[in-house]
Image 1 (cartoon, rainbow, N blue to C red):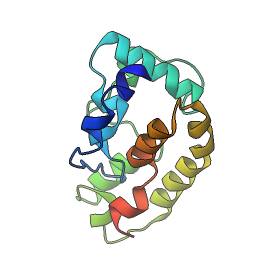
Image 2 (image 1 turned 120 degrees about the vertical axis):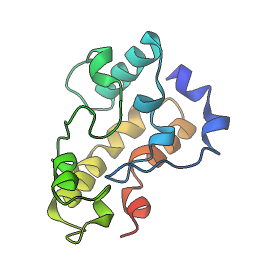
Image 3 (image 1 turned 90 degrees about the vertical axis):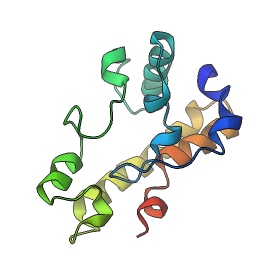
Length: 139
């Protein structure tokens, strides 16, 4: 994604912002995309990487933070709310089946992401965004 890769120098030194599931929002294209073109390019990449079955709308691809839309494919948002914690690793049941399933699903899509990326640098940034959950949550 051209708009994303143009920010690599800045993103490489960005202070991490770890989501409840261990993703790094500081370098996540969904979180960073602001213009309609950036959002659309992100949606196209998400389909290409196998994270969506179609190119979704800009509204659907834009990120407004965990919990703001109340939707999580793995039920993690409602889970942390019900356990009254801010992230999975603060929960007394951590690591649980839900976070393991999220990590497993993420890992299953890693090779498709690698193939969808235009460069190794882009893939490495996606790894930081989505494939370091275990490190970020300190299993």
